[in-house]
Image (cartoon, rainbow, N blue to C red; front, side, top):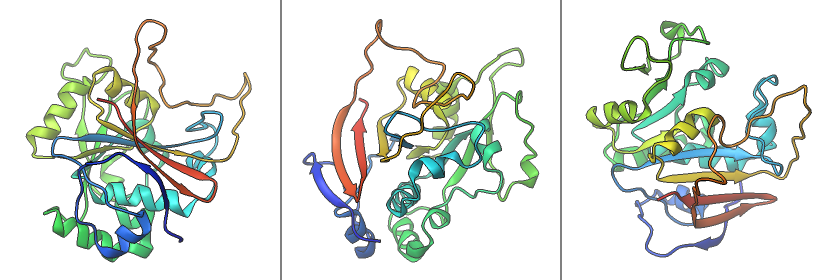
Length: 249
């Protein structure tokens, strides 16, 4: 993989000391303050992040980008815990949600980074679930997740503020959300998302009335009544893919 091309980066961003191999590939450094919740998505030119009736649609949307896999892995390597929703977990029941599974070529460098950050060998895995809609045999997953459920038996949704607070109580400082657009929308609604990493892929997904296509946020609406805006922190490029980093604070 060729190093990403740095096109723009805001000054004075938090910076970890990355191993030389990661710093070279990322074309600079990356860092997060303690208590940061950041999300990662890949999106088509026409705004699709997932096609529910197509297996592994995110890989199709990413257009087989090795750089996208690398950035996903780097973000996982910085995280204390990876947070997903039950739908995402159900769609990828064999995934381990660790850096080296996304980009095996830099496994050693990712391990070195986690040691430097005083992190364990791999981030914990947490899943938000109401227990309805998806039958997940947690004991059959590659590793045991932290299961975050509604705070009361009659609740129809998980209180994401309580879920994130529960992760903080366990000592998790940096939370990476790899959940789908419904979970992301819930976190955004609650004002819990600090940063968004968005890979813009040079493909067009298209849509019809018969086939549902998911966009970045589902089950939440903002405009015209509420403005939810972002500030651009950095732009990187790999061939025809753009890697955008936004602050949502």
